[in-house]
Image 1 (tube, one colour):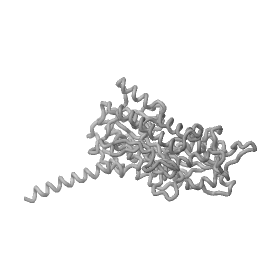
Image 2 (cartoon, helix red, strand yellow; image 1 turned 60 degrees about the vertical axis):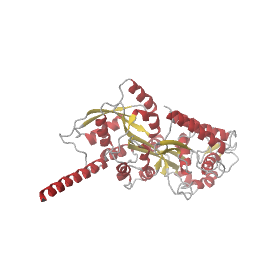
Image 3 (cartoon, helix red, strand yellow; image 1 turned 45 degrees about the vertical axis):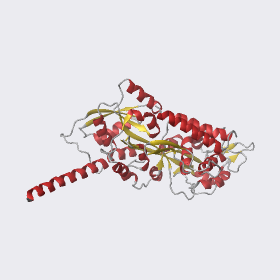
Image 4 (cartoon, one colour; image 1 turned 180 degrees about the horizontal axis):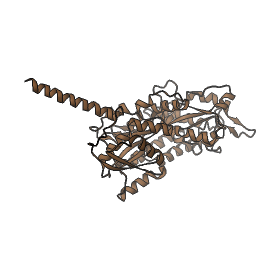
Length: 439
């Protein structure tokens, strides 16, 4: 009677070992199997806006020994990606997989297939990726596997701060009021020749939508909320939309720096684009993506600047900034979805993600990599910012951009007060989301 028990125990032991190996393979702590006994999935086509040379190098360096699947990468223009994807699917020539940004997810959701939680559990997903990756979770499964994160950070001009005998940039938004009159310089005609911060307008502020998103989310607004799979507009936080509402306060703070009668006056619509002004050395603070760091250095090698984590609200319980995340998703029209799934798990492995980070200078999306402390000053900020990055579900990037612009313009032109402008924007978001749901 002992032999059956021994046999059962042996089978159970093998099963447990296989489970452990499977988990380690997904987590990147062990390589996925690549022996000749594996299934040969053939070739899968992957589309994305990441430079072709970067992706080819990553695939060649990390997946050269992989015999179970071949990944053919095709670089696409980021500006026309969604349109190209739609047209290709209509002609039956679409890719098997795409590297898609989180703000393009909703407009392409019906073209993608979710990975069921029976294949990759929600717990394994959350243990592997940074928090913003949760945006890719839907009730049916995982609509994309996080691949790249580009957080918004604060760039600051060290020389301008040093001229005011300041050695560190502000960490709290409340510090901005006292700093603006010190660092903003005007000529005899009252024209701004050196600015402290690009706040208050819309058209000439680079990354303004992202800046507003940070202020709104830090004030408690989810903007567009995913409530167990159901999308809801949450631009305005609960409670009366009055002067005491945190979101109203945050948006009013943004507009204060464009009012000529205020000590904080630092910006107007006649000034150059904020990034250009920062590169010229005439702007103390600029808010931009981590990916802009190299190009700013190239534009002005003599600019003495550093980066810092995005300022926060005083006594905040949760630190956050905005991050643009890209994920690897499987096309619903793919005729090789099994191969696409296998290729996806290879692309989010430890080696590829580590190589991507080293090549781009951006922080990794994996928790086991982003938690490694960096000695380089800029990288340290980028890594910390990735950990606190958040975003929201954008039903139409171009249209929501227009909604935000109208909101700021209506307040600056005195057509509306901030409470009414936010209420109007909230209703516009509801109409956009309704249109998305009816697609």
